[in-house]
Image 1 (tube, rainbow, N blue to C red):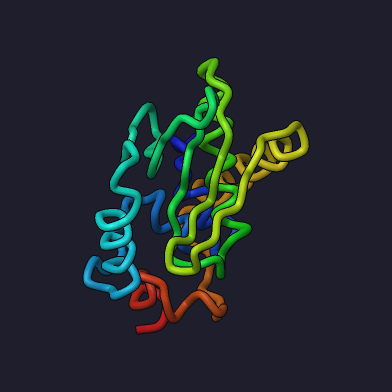
Image 2: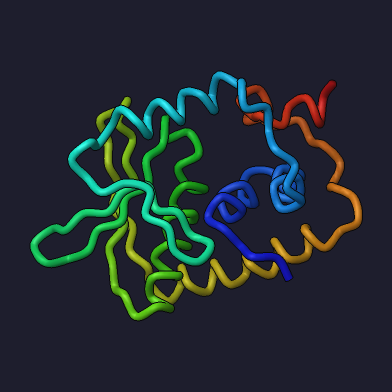
Length: 164
């Protein structure tokens, strides 16, 4: 069984091959422009919030307090993969809940000046548990799933692994 991370939850919803590569510690192209833009967004946005909070196998982008509530934020370049980002943030809320912390989630798209609240409910918890089983199945494969051309390939740091 693999230590599931928010990044694995996000990638599982987009590309099983990427999930396998990440779980097997294969590093994507660090010079890929999309990855560099993500680093820049991390550094340049939400400077008043606490950033990069780590516990167990979780790294939360930002955390803030709002009228007594703990709000966990996940920062994304765009809303193109909004559903995957929602699941990633739900995973963080799930892990916090397992540690006795009730928090609210907020997806943040600074370039679009958009935000989307995410709340963990029983349906979302069941969806995550189903995803955890799927991730473990993919990661336990001896070789990665075959590449499949999808819209996200052009912005993927693993593109060379699939299409070189």
